[in-house]
Image (cartoon, rainbow, N blue to C red; front, side, top):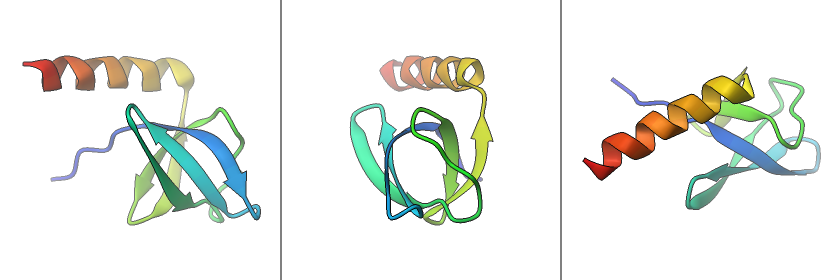
Length: 71
């Protein structure tokens, strides 16, 4: 099983590489499958943006993730 943690797009390079902010870490992912915009929350699989999720759902998921990591 895989845990998908949402990340926020903070930069897009060459219209196909998104820089994703994951709480305390930044990673790059290919976003050529979807029309990605800075500020959107996304789910990544194998280095590809595979889905966008609403901001309120992403924030709720991140809160639950942070709470689980603390315990």
